[in-house]
Image (tube, rainbow, N blue to C red; front, side):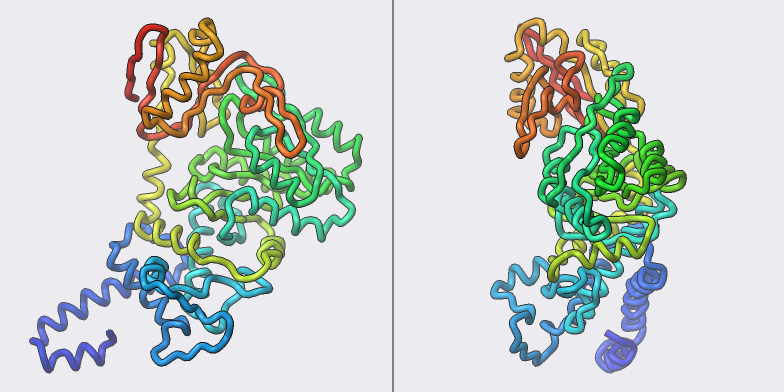
Amino acid sequence: MNSEIFSLSERLVSSSYVRQGLQARRAHEQLIRLLLQQGKCPEEEWSESTVELFLNELAVMDSNNFLGNCGVGEREGRVASGLVARRHYRLIHGIGRSGDIAAVQPKAAGSSLLNKITNSVVLDVLRFTGVRSVSSCFVVPMATGMSLTLCFLTLRHRRPGARFILWPRIDQKSCFKSMLTAGFEPVVIENVLEGDELRTNLEEVERKIEELGAENFLCVHSTTSCFAPRVPDRLEELAVLCAKHDIPHIVNNAYGMQSSKCMHLIQQGARVGRIDAFVQSLDKNFMVPVGGAIIAGFDENFIKEISKMYPGRASASPSLDVLITLLTLGANGYKKLLAERKELSALAERHGERLLHTPHNPISLAMSLNRLQTHSTAAVTQLGSMLFTRQVSGARVVPLGVEQTVSGHTFRGFMSHACYFLGHIFNFKRSRCFTLYVFTQSSVSEDRQ
């Protein structure tokens, strides 16, 4: 409703009442105006009514919602179910065009605006969470693994003779398969044990570069967020090596946005050396449904190359989900979530175990299971199943000596991130609320931290 409609309303309802309604409407519009003007995540949360008003305004800008529209092409935003249309706020056209996921669609000004403003808001969040010098990013409707693959395929055009990707070992299947799916051979660098921590073997990295030749490497594929006792890679040192040997550097930052330390590592790596792109998951960092990621970097032209590599148009659902989430949280609400952490070392000691000393891993904790190990390996794995049946999800038990074959490559000691380790471990994410069940031979006790 515009000012003219409000004026006409005064013929039917008292003008003082109508003016109150107009002021309320303008309060919503002021928030939307600031969002479009600044392109940043609002400091304070929006009400759901403001968010829905904004999305409905965007939807009426798309041609499938024009009154009297007659679409006769193959892509006209047709939806058979009204429930499906409402689920997507009638933003049906998706984002991008066949040549570029970031391109504007002539038929869908509203969906295109949604895409642009989401990318701008996410860029602001990347900056205030620690990567201040990031220059460009975009939301892609693929999870982390396929988003990494898209980065590798883009680099193929820059380095057509490359065969290998140098990869400090991290026992997560998707990041390993992302390299194989792109058609490259991973050169796995085993980690070194320093105290309780598994850290990047820089000497082996440099030795492999010298052995195989820098020109034969597509990139170094490093990791920030990981499960203890693995800790984030030595990003600064790897970035310096990449700059020295002129090798691109892609960082798997899957759930690193929730850690200021991981974000600081990326910022420092880009400052002292070379980081071409870093990828983070939407569901892990923003509590939205699975299926989206953010690809970001420090060279705007390279990030545009990656967006143009995406074939066809794309679903707008991940962009819509993360924009709604950030608007309803606000920057202050998101920062508050990031600040809520707890330590569990006292709990481990009460049960005769110890929390591994992994100060370089701000996201994950690991606890020994020596007491269970004295009984049997079955008792160790039973702990994991008992946790799951008691609705404790996300924690994992890592038995000693497990072998796992992923696409033809066998990893010894899978999930402990090394072909050797100290013993059985139990790891879990640092979080603001966590229920940990610790089982002894004869009884079950429950501790809440």
